[in-house]
Length: 332
Image (cartoon, one colour):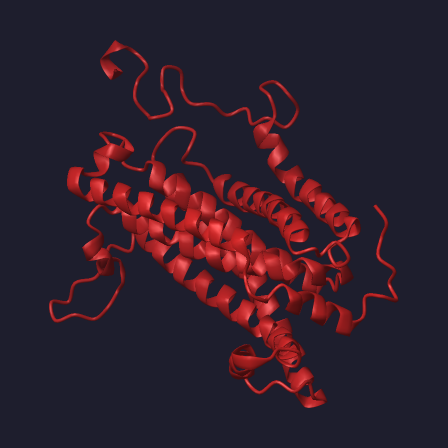
């Protein structure tokens, strides 16, 4: 595939190419929107069945009370954490190719963390009492159990959603202002409001770059700490093979690895559907593939076949299954 001539990709070319994707939607958009609404309807029906018949429909039974919804929560949180981390680290290292991919990663983060926040609420069973997870002042002096991993998840989601949203919106301000200058009609008025008076002056850029740098420096360690907290949902269980300090670094490494892969998965159809081949080139996918390979290396020892180099030698005691019960007749 031929690469785009660097002389052609100017700031004006990039602005107009992106603004072209913000026009009136076509039939494909409405078809995908109808499909999304249909899937939402299916999800609402499933939730109503869950409220009517209980969490047993999701496989919750003694002694398994940490089931599919927490698994889905970890999946979405992992993807969410990697997006901002990719953008922040590439910004701190001043990677020039970051500009074509980081907005997708940041948007993926915000939507994924909002999706992740739904699953602890579904997991509690009585969703109308979700506010019990929040430590709010009340006349009875009641507070949530801060030893519960659900409380940790609530703080993890709230903290990361706040920082990721601010990181995304702050980065969008110059982009919205650029689109504002080429838009017309009601879109121009909308972009003028959301651009927050950005004019691109030297003073604005000086404050912007300094604030963006501080926010990127804050987001990077925050990702590591927050996803370590999520791993403790499982590591705090007194179950052989699960109660281990390895979970935190393994969860962080797996989250970054899967997040880079998800960015690639999203960029491929976006590049094709919006005709952005001149902006998102093979060079960007090669760099993302190298980053995916790099972040996948820490997960290799845990996923190696038995007997291979790097495979942990610790194993549950003989006769003890993954659920912590005896494998003999008495434990069945």
